[in-house]
Image (cartoon, rainbow over all chains, first blue to last red; front, side, top):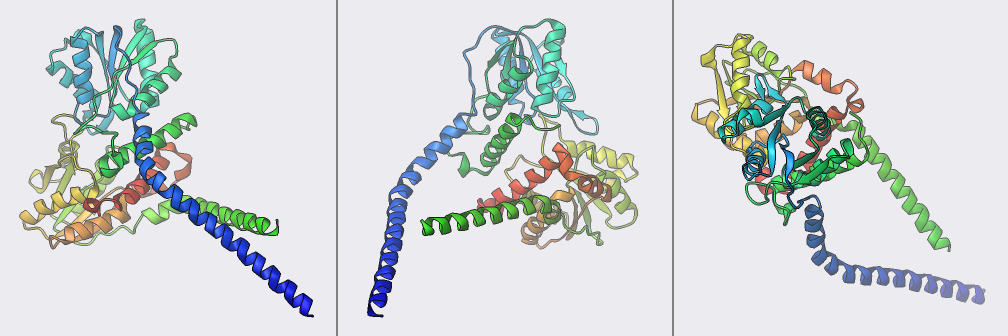
Amino acid sequence: MQLNEKSRASLEKTILTVQHSILLKIALFVCLIAPILYLLLPIVLTKSAEALIRNDQLVKSDVVVAFAGDALNNRERHAVELYRQGWAKKVVISGAEVAWGIHTADLAKRFVLGMGVPESDILMIRDTRNTRTEARELEKLMQSNQYRSVIVVTSAFHSRRATYTLETAAGDFSIISSPVGTGEPEWRPDRWWSRRKDMITTVREFFSWANTLAGAWQ
Amino acid sequence: MAMTAIIFKRSLLGLVLLGGLTVSLFFMTPTLLIANSETPKSDIIIDYSIDWRSKSGEYIAWLYREGVAPKILTASSQVAEGAFPSDNAREHLIHLGVKPDDVYSFHLPIVGCRAETFAVIAKFIKSQGWNRALIISRPEASRYVGVVGRRVMGREGLEVSVGYAPEDYLELTSDSWASHSKVQRLVDESMNIALDQFYPECR
């Protein structure tokens, strides 16, 4: 009887020691790792956002395309700048109907004409619902005009996915990325989580990447 | 070894329960996001669902004809320099029979979130002497629009109700998980709600 009680007590003591030892290890782990994570996390998050950006060395190309979706027209502005500097011979603009009588491609064309680009140097892609349809329509336009090279202008956060999608749709073209610069009022990758509008943009872009890579359904 | 097995089983059970909860929440999203549609008598109807694919314009015109509110406000920020869909929504409502003097197009600044938008709208509504606003939104935004609208606009002393077009509701809830664009709308709205909680200016 005494032996059994002793054995039981000894076993209980061993279990408690082991449990405490595990808890101690967990506590030590958390105390060591938590500060490292606290210091590293902002760097990791910023680097993740910077990875969304693709900015290539400029090469003279047949066309420069301003992807749709910029309410401030900064994409069109940058595309026209590249056209003026002689990097491309034509400007391609795109858009979709957003309200009765408003087609953003028409608005983009009006903007580009207002910046002095001759109408003969403006090409349009209409009814682009998302990046994938935009890439497909651009590929068709380039094939029909026998263009082989394009400079892609879009927002910085969108640049890598836009060029990836275009390369998937039209791998034999030369595709150069020249995104709109970062900084207010545009998206900024540094500490993006501290600003609501940059947070939603970045998170949405990560989701869109997952969607793109999964070859999402239409 | 026995302890490892216990920990493993409990972890597995926890993961299965979490997975089940996540999947359930995923399919319950329309129910969680969509509130009951309201149509009380109001001073102004706010068209917060400007989209040519939506039937909100027709619904708002019908509410106006039924005398739910004597005035309508279409509100949007720009989609390109100088281009505001609220202007076109106003024209559309006039085309549907609303008197031009009874519908206003309000140009919103580009702001970060719904609360900031409603703060701007609330100031305008208050300045016009209106006190009761009926917001017509997309169905998936209705519950959160109600929460934020009442909180933000309530600070200006406004009474807020939220409704949506029945056709928009039917369109969204029919096979919502079979359509990429519908899933995108539901996920977008869920994401917006979650992210707003982290920013004081958006709560």
